Image (cartoon, rainbow, N blue to C red; front, side, top):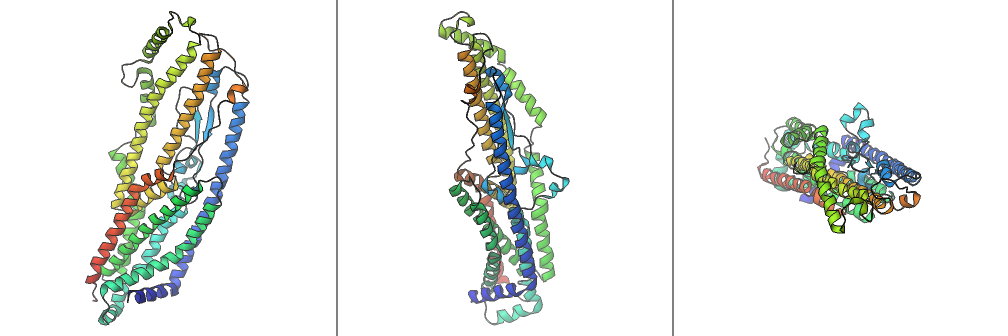
Length: 472
């Protein structure tokens, strides 16, 4: 009985001209979004690769100078785009793509793509993820609002139930038929996305395909929850018009109000420090120590005494190496402790804000889906933090090599000594290894849990409502 009802519902939907038009519009929009995103990612990858190659040439050909000056000359490193940014750009337009590495400072990523955008960006970008998050639920609403309420209005519900069809079988049959129609609609989009992913060079093929599969599961949970909620509303609404009005209000609250309200709520609970305050606090900690009672000069003087005692000398000039180079190494170590402390606190707070927004998804499922989608696509904040940590580690490695050169190959007590290309070549080009899929799954876990709870709760509610389905 359920299969017969599902087949009949599927054929009715598929023959409906309105559905075909709406489906065609959605598929075209999703296809165009994927195609444009694929082109943008290809272009951005080519631009960043060319910029990285040019920066490497500039570094190698900077000429002869002392190694300390080279540390201030610095290098730029560029953040590679994740393969699945084709599907969901996430935070990429709003976080920096380039980091300047120099001695004594840990810089944040700069050159945000959103800075060069027009005011229209405030309305968001058309991506495949946005289409599935906003347009697909709207299509489900248009498909389902009259599925049960409409039959009640037309009087056909009484006829069907009088034939001995159980209300639960009727509801499940309609849900399966509508779900299959929606799946048939979205399969071409999924295939198009798979083709786009397969044609991206230099991607982590195995990890990307695993992430892609989990993305499919996340969106399936989301649409399944939306479908169940829509059918439950249609089952209890007195008229199709009432069901449509209710579902459109729910869609607007989920798609428009919830993201902004959740973001404001997270900011109010865990406010982000202003950039000027953050920089001031970090600079103060560098000068006075993390505890505020260990001035930098005092620490370095104690370090000098310990070094002299260790080598059995009474004067710095008697040391068998350039003490200034060793001081630079120690100074970078002390500053690194401050940087690690302050940036970790900032990043932990931003991740805590994201968790608040994600768990607010218990009220609006879109919030859970967005968090899971960005994490699985590799475009969330945890991925950006991973890149920032890798860039900072590269900065410390290259500054360490320069300071060791000063320590071992220049006269004691001076910053002098000239280095050239042979030293510059010892510093390898920056290479970023993205985190494994397990990292993405851990980051996506709260969002996936929210989606699972929504899907389970929505279908449970639908099954509880079904036996109460009665004609007017």
